[in-house]
View: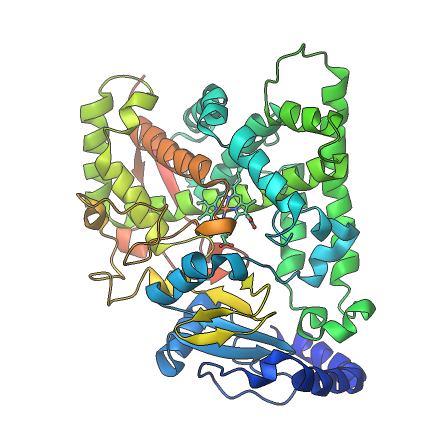
Length: 503
Ligand code: HEM
């Protein structure tokens, strides 16, 4: 939080403190939270609690340092909010497996209430809501089932080929902004699967319309909001986040409205070709509203595009820093794919080293280092033996867990070999809790498409190009400093020069 936001915060807090403090006193007395035995945590200041302990552009690291002092199950008070931060594999199992039915709730950010989006959004609905269950079924059966994924494979492969073609045509021999072009290709993979259109131009350095709209919406969420710290003040929307987000989200809804209008003007016969066809069919059967269709498209784009692009970018950056690992991965591709222009689907399972590279990239640079905060829907759950009262927010610091020296040898080193010959699988909380996509009711619904995208993009771009750093940069010059907003960004976006190796 910058100094001016802190000043605004303090002024607003003075104005609202009377209401908030009264509410604070009443709620402290009347809820089960007052009787709770909270885990240790840093002492807070009256009313504000620990908000100054967690102001950081690297919240995952700040929470890891605090956990080293106060313990792997730690409590914080953020304004009126009680928070438990979990930094061990055993604690993560309590949250994601043992007490998943209670702890799969969400605390709705006030900005997410714009346009009442939280009432129809998969991300914000409580896991007990019938609409939540329906949307998860829609995702699992129509969007990302084996059948659905097979149906969209040709479209997805074409988008990755477009990336290779664009790199050959427009970028060969020039330093490429890796993050920019990856986000464009991820947006096109998503839009290709969802509604068979391209939304980004790979040959242009300009941001696409959808990218701008998503960025504006996401940024509004990441700004500090008094309404979240002091829900009693939420109706006043003192920071204007809900108002601003209503504008951004309306623009996104209008974008999807135009896609739907185009679709309705195009006769497509009886056969459903893409996800939008499936969703519009569910709408015609009165199972979901048109707003829910748009909210789902919004959720999938916002949650799916940047997270996957960031992961590929981080993994490539690690490969640029570790040329020996990169050449081992390229040798494996050479021996499996040979002189074929593009790897085939059947080649992918013959690339264990590249898969290990992907998993190590996910371990070290998880795009959602703190996952998404969960909330206790009722009393009754326990984490590390501590009771978790209803309404408590639970943050799983997966970044810390996946770098815990108690579980991982040399955790700060990029060593894909650690995944070779193991059956570590991102789908289960094993002893080490390698869970980049979460587990249980809130498991990432895009996990399969994300892993396919990461693996396929890596295979295609490593097979088609030799990659060098620009202007005499050394591998050790690649800057891996991270910054956490809603996902883990590189402070210095990585650039590299692709040189085509065949054709
Ligand atoms: C490398 C890429 C990705 C990573 C690491 C990732 C990881 C995650 C994590 C950790 C969560 C939160 C789980 C929890 O709350 O316990 C999540 C939720 C979610 N992800 Fe992903 N994800 C990725 C890509 C995708 C893609 C490609 C899509 C869509 C196609 C997607 C859609 C979603 C949605 C809609 C949610 C919210 C689910 C809910 O609240 O029930 N994600 N993801």
